[in-house]
Image (cartoon, rainbow, N blue to C red):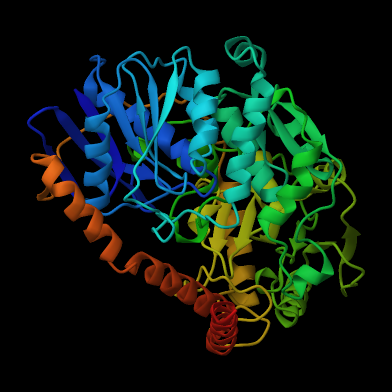
Length: 585
């Protein structure tokens, strides 16, 4: 009995007179979770999804001694390609070994694991490259206490396959490095090296993401015991994830310079090439920077990190962000007649996340007119009238500053999330080009977010609005709305006679409910394999690569949302020119 797991919109049924197959189809969902809808995590690699599918197949099999055949989540195969893979496996049945099935170019198509794979083996599946079959075969042979072999399917190539929403070209070297480094860490002894090494996460930036990572880690306490983080952010980890070891990285910060604010973005892959050489050898590393686009997801980034760290999310009740313990009521010294202290932070990391300067001035004037004591946290040398300006210096300085305030108003940014998620300071978060669901604090009298709810957000714009033009995001609410929200929140906080009751900090996982597929099955008939194999090989070879064109269309639409029609048109022309020149050569 072989149980198949595959990321596929269709429900597959395999008919084979010689072998019993059971096929389980899964999707990666950005809006819902269930047994067959796997959580869309921006920070989970294809290997993490392979590990998750393996785990779910074991649940379905109810611990029966079944081999598991998991198709590589990174590539989407056609029905004919799946047929060729299964036919090749049927011709070379495995017994008690791992089989890595590759295409003709050496890319992994799927992995067959024997029934002897244990729960203790599961975490190490996240180390597979999913991009190099030879490397993964060698890694499996060292990681697990049974042999590994490699099979090739000459009639299949994933060169132009769809990537199921994963970042491929840029992350290809990263995924390969994770597996190569794991192999080096294991050393020739294999099993002994596995016991000696522990897991570390690569989470070098940015401050807000580091905060959400630490909050997720503190809630679930995963197998990861260390985190590689930029030296500038080590205090965030130390203050919010007690017990998590820190691997400080003395490397420059990424995408926080004046060049970035002008639209010059350093790719994640290029930055990782700077980080990788300084990572200690003694760890197995999990890459927890983007492998998917978080903008399409309706889930909180805390849960994105929790899934990437190994948490299984079966239903809405398993999501952590909305179930986190509410913050304690912030101790405010509201003495009679004393002015209310308001901290303002207008920056958000890039131009379209900054509250427009004219609105900043209007908000300060309105607050001054209402006799608030105003402090502006600033990262530049700009001065503001009617208020005190404080330059950001360090994490301890920021924390002390927040603890001296009655309320904070900020952007979708680290200081705002620190105030709302960890300190319990009454906080208003002003959203512009990003989606509130991805970073909101739990609902309470101490937290509120404001936006105009425009359908164009989230967008990919950095310097210029792709929809309306200009450097200001139209999704920001006017200053009058902000002032009214401040007064409403202060009333709610004063009415609350006691701090919110904190829930238990221990979160258990619900039991999975496999359920049945409601979709009509698509049959894969493996009878008469010898006669059908040449036909399916010819069909795969002659089928146009619509997947390639779908990728081009997806890239075009992302660029259109991010940069507008003019820049997208020019970029497309440059791409076509380069392509035609290469073909001419």
